[in-house]
Image 1: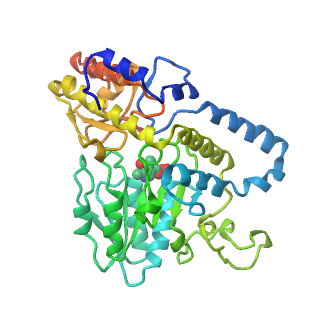
Image 2: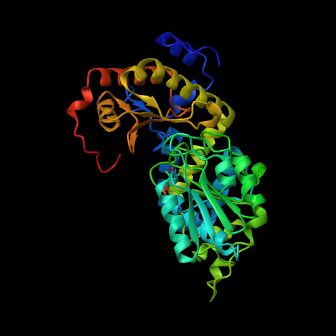
Length: 420
Ligand SMILES: *Cc1c(COP(=O)(O)O)cnc(C)c1O
């Protein structure tokens, strides 16, 4: 990009020529003064989603009642195919929107391990998101397998070399996050997937922090399995159902452990024994969350309209700008960048390291700048490409500089809250 300048007029120029600028108006903005840099934790509410949810509730449920199941029944596949086409690089019939990321991870990890007899090791990294580590440890314990933890630098993430050094003939499954939840480090999906498959193991990607912000090409990379959530960059709302991907060639060889009736052949014959359908449908469990899945469809449509290419381009420009300003203003105040500096190795959020990160974050919220805190001493700032302006970055970093200079954070309790 052109040279980044630290004066605010530079940010104003970037906003004036931003091809995605108008999308900002498509979101609920009850407080125009709020600078929201936490869309990577809970995305903002698209206005179209509020309307769609009202319609699903009032018309489809309120008036249609049980008759609406005629079309609701296909919703998990329909929303999955839409997501696959626009944001995951997945051909139809390989993605479902259902359950939570945690539950989908369990379903796919268990199925993958069971499909690899004689291989008894699951590999992940010691800085993977907690739910991933806990679920994989649980699956390993359940099946008498072991969990091998890669040692990972929390600021730079997992490297292909580290993965190559950890897989062998005993490895059944490797499961990693595409974008690290804390640092935003972006793993090389194509290279790592190739290494894992060459070792005869299956690869399961967690796309929670990449879906909707970074182009993902699951089919082209030869990925076997993936999961991810929809309430971050996909803006589908708190607790909206997650997604799962199973490559077509693998589907019928896998059997997932939650043998629910939505995966059953001739579901409404209510047969005596579980007999899963062929294809992606066997990875469904029970009755889907219709309201939440409708919100996933709307969120996906909005990002598809913007296009993942332009979203990624703006995302890298926003985070590069954030890093430039942090280097100029915050480094002299004791703040270090705790994310990859190479934009190609970074998702759409950045962490700043400071011993007072927790209290600085609290003071920023009072100044109407919302980011979040991550252990041990990180302030995480997530500029969501579809809603964030360059001037938001300038104003947020300016506010951060003042909070640190004035020691405004000292008024806040040292002890982190229950939810950070
Ligand atoms: C947000 C996130 C999750 C969340 O899982 P839930 O089941 O929705 O609570 C899982 N993995 C990663 C990497 C995440 O960032």
